[in-house]
Length: 430
Image 1 (cartoon, helix red, strand yellow):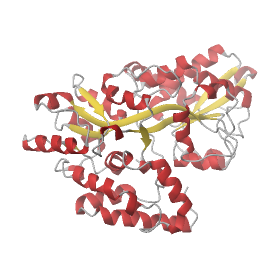
Image 2 (image 1 turned 60 degrees about the horizontal axis):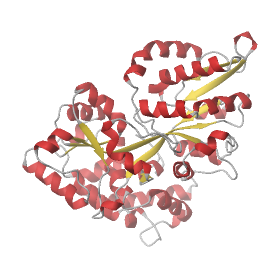
Image 3 (image 1 turned 180 degrees about the vertical axis):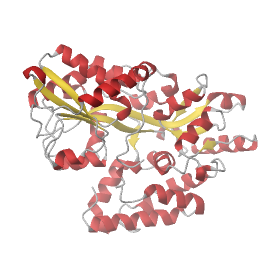
Image 4 (image 1 turned 90 degrees about the horizontal axis):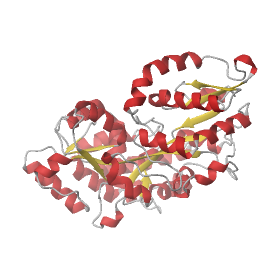
């Protein structure tokens, strides 16, 4: 996973069953011109980053067309966003993971202001503020958060019950649980180092989040630029020292073959009950379910301090809606955004895809596997993963691989500071 990785939020059963036929139809439709629809109506291109929910959104777009005759919407299912803006041919409406890649377009002012849309007033301010942590453009609301993904420690309820283990609420309790599992011959945590994104999304982000406020930390890091170092106000070496001590301890409880295991291996092994915990997000749940539909799992935020009140969930805005300033049909694009932001549409999507609604007074996520995170989302006791703020030109995942194998997490933090200074000197940090 990189800061621009499209996290694999799974389709629901009914979405999956409709998927293959819809994908074929939408793939063909995506090649059609978008400015003028057949029969003289208006054509819009809808750019959706998440390939795994194309079929789901295809059904929504057909509903929109039924309600708004004269507008035809086709999917732009290309993966890359940059070529659209380079050619000055962006899609009419975009639906994209909110991250450093999207931040570049926000900062350049090529995304229009959506603040006057009625739906903009229905978004929770504490979720809306998350997108501002990456970038803002003066006087504009460039992105409307659509879907919030929350992640924590996925755990096997049967293993915990069999060994009479509580869900840990403090760092000491977490270590005690891991020690008891180890003594009982149970692998405490299944890790998949071969896919480096799983390391920074899980081990790195979970260890940092409740001890450091990532948004504020990286705001100061950007201000300091080339002055970042061991004596600066903030730095990786200083602020992440305790979190990485935690990460070092956590990695000692990994499965012995973690270095050669990939994400798919982790889903399979956890689904087979080969470990008690898994540092993954909701996107892994459907894959685990394919292995054992009856496996009882839950999720809890990793406690990394001795104060239970400091626990937080790791979140990201999994999808956000935006309209490029170069969109040829602004009025129709805004109609589509308003349609997709309707509570009955938005809330249903998030319920169906194991995410959380971004709207005020939204219903809770009903899936029991995520119940352990609901209260944290409700109270905004959450943080965006620190790894999502690290530019892709800094190989954070590879550094984590090396640190886990050598135990030298301090050296990794010094290297991160050096890389930050190097990029800042080139004007390359976001």
